[in-house]
Length: 117
Ligand code: HEC
Image (tube, rainbow, N blue to C red; front, side):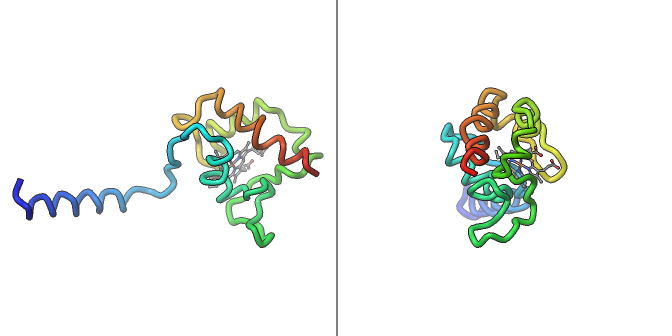
């Protein structure tokens, strides 16, 4: 391939990437706290309360996981399902997380947010 054609190919490639919706979540690398911070915290907050570090509500926050009273009424199975299937603004993570990984996310990351309060 000549240099100009290579440059064109690279350009087209970049344009295609840029045109892709930003919504597509990145693949899971096996580190649950990291995935929470990299992917979920954008909407749910680092601490699971749906707020940014300054304490303001995040635009797409869904549920205050630190509200132990409300969280206590939620079933793991529903949380796993919502994580996999999505709900309203919440993206679906099936294809990124297996049901077992989604369960671990609920047990190891999300449940402890409520237990701290
Ligand atoms: C684009 C924003 C966004 C991202 C990213 C996001 N969520 Fe959500 N999530 C929401 C919204 C909004 C809701 C509330 C949906 C509803 O119940 O109406 C929600 C709800 C949930 C619920 C159910 C809470 C309830 O209502 O009982 C769980 C569990 C959950 N998210 C887990 C996660 C996990 C785990 C991740 C990362 C792998 C994640 N979310 C990433 C926006 C997001």
